[in-house]
Length: 355
Image (cartoon, rainbow, N blue to C red; front, side, top):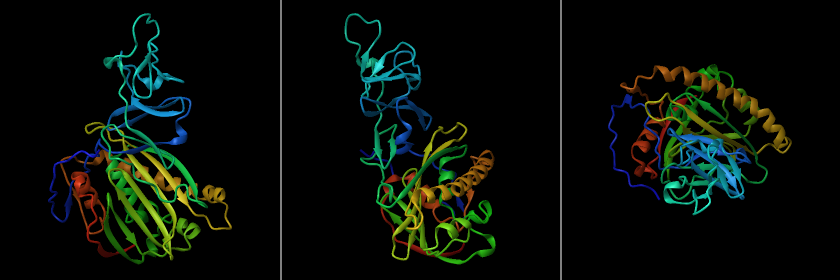
């Protein structure tokens, strides 16, 4: 169920914008790959709140990572067929939070409202574990290409000590690539005039680039038949880069979930859970394509991480960012975060960039 938010009008000068809006609690975040939660519990953080993921009796569950008895971290406990045991006194909690065992108790039931752990909404979809620490919408967003035939998928994760919205914008921003990823994504000496259309989506916004081929090594090696690309933001923390051929078939999609680990006032930190799905050429096995592509992607991630972590300590929370016509998606992202009720399509806007 989506919470009713008050409407907030964002009125800013054309050349100024706010620092990052806070990401909301009442939303789904892809916090882990499904394969990362096995026999042992796993701790994750969203907006400063800790949760524990575990599988018991074949069922995936999520609880707040705190035993109601003496507040020990349940993520340090042991999984049993009927639940997760606390590492302190061994109280055991079912996936729905009920206390099902209390070692040493002779008479009476171990369960009582005050002895229950707090369950959290959790879902497995597209190979990701989606979690919320609030009241999320009915369904998490879907990832393009995942699970389709002849599609190869890579999965990885990393963390960045930066504001999650700044990191998300960086992922979608094409204008930094010549400087931060020279020769890898685009090349400064090979700029071309590129038509761009910015359009609203149900639940987000995207910029579509009629860019036949980017000028860096990745495009030359893996995107010879690409004719169009897009950068897409889906509320509140999912970003996607997609590449299509002349027939409009998606050839490669990089999806990244930006999970805000810290709360406002803490040093900023974001966990990024990434999925790369692509259709390799017929003459390249998917495993080979993945092995060739992975080093380039990881190199771009390392470069982005480095610049974001250099920027983060210099952000003045009392000042606004300077803005320009090149900031295609950031104003829309800020508006959507300020007022989720604006999640409706809008009139497309066309422009041109030298990329």
